[in-house]
Amino acid sequence: MGTAVIREVEAADWAAIAAIQARVPEAAGWKVEDYLSYQVDLACVGEEVAGFLVTRRLVEGESEVLNLAILPEYRRRGSARGLLERAMGRWPGRWFLEVRVSNVSALGCYENLGFRRIGVRPGYYPTENGKSPEEGIVMERSW
Image: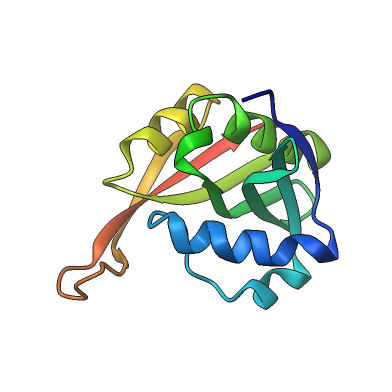
């Protein structure tokens, strides 16, 4: 498997994004059409979409990560870092995100990129069984 190429989403990519969401339980399960008003970038390895990042600019100098998902077979190869660095380079300033407390690998990735924990959102993420919502860790980084 080669290095991921980071690029903006194209019309033909939406099905691949939906397929990634279906395979990655940590990803937010949005309807793909809900992403149309946001910035969407892809990590591609060869012809395959290996992952995606959805971001938005809140105001001048503040932006937010809405969803980030990488297929399991492409993790730990720099795709998430590449997607985040491209987004943060596009919109310098403060960045915010929420991540499941149980998503230890994502927390480590974000912390390695300089994000710091600034709060907790109790019951922020639904669980598969719907019985015990999971905390979200709020993180922030200045770029």
